[in-house]
Image (cartoon, rainbow, N blue to C red; front, top):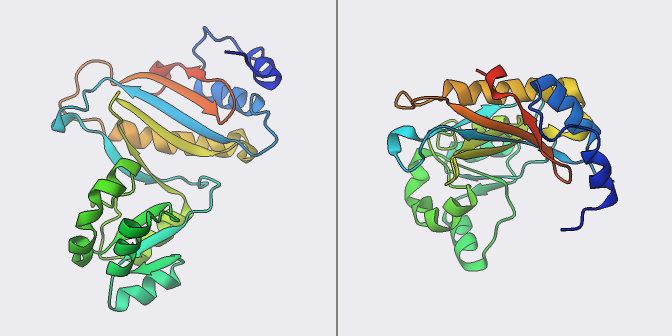
Length: 230
């Protein structure tokens, strides 16, 4: 694989064999973000659990203090008085079966977050097969199935993100944009890592955080000393 000049230059800025302290890694990931656009900084955490077991699932949601830097489009399934509340909170789309039909029939996905009031689960239940694989299916654990849809919309707009294990026991989450700078990225990093540690399953044995890597959209991965995280 032929690497671009900017990527090659970025690789020279750090030692690929070294595990860095979090603050050092964040500073380096900012330095290695050399694209012409504002790159997203992502955290990748490998956990010492087995996602095949229900009692070792790690999933939740957390509001990043400085947001993600991304404009979030919200779809809300609700009815009655909650419709006006969701719209007032800033939801782009609010309704019921008509949006479920649009997703199913038109393959429509012009949204980033789906929120639903509990009385609408019958409507969106049939969307599990299309929303689930995209990580968009609302759930009580993530706070996206709630009677207070307005609050959920406000949190989503403020930078609430959901974290969950993939099939390889890794959590992938954005912690902001390169333009945020090290201080704001550090605050978001600490908030997300703290939430993941707090979500440690009681059945998890041995080392919980196996490895941790920070990377920008186009940049190399910076390894973090995971012993500094627990």
